[in-house]
Amino acid sequence: MAIRKDRVRAIAVFKARTELSDDDIHARAEKMIESVKALPIMQENLLKYEVSFKTERPAATLASELGLRETEFSAMILVEAVSHEKIHETLTDPGYRKLLAGALEHITTREDMHFFPAEFTTIIDK
Image 1 (cartoon, one colour):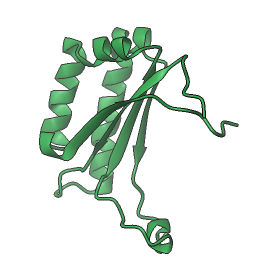
Image 2: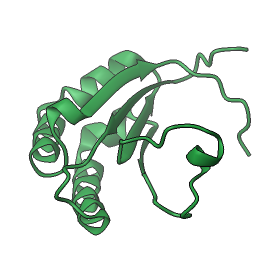
Image 3: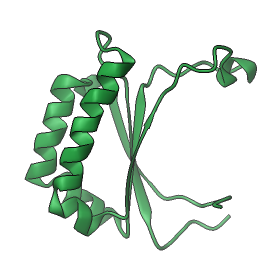
Image 4: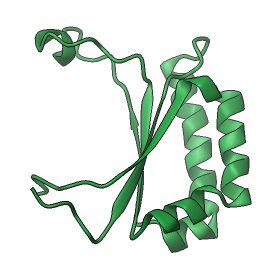
């Protein structure tokens, strides 16, 4: 297994506030995504900024079929850049920190957001 040397990632997973419906989460996330895209530093430093939302469909979840516990997390944010320094520079930028503060106020809480930097290997990529 070869760890990729051309890019690194940072991953955040979070649990949405309990009072929010799936529609609320998507609507609020859409606003944040548009704001993220508008920040020049995001375009300059990142190779990828991806948001994945948990889905409740199908009714018989894959997790239960595999004998696994269904996650409590609502969404995942994945960012890629050529270095952890570029990710750090981007995510500590005052403009992004302001967006993060808004997300922590309107979508999730600091306690329900988990973050980690990552190196990775690509197994299949079609």
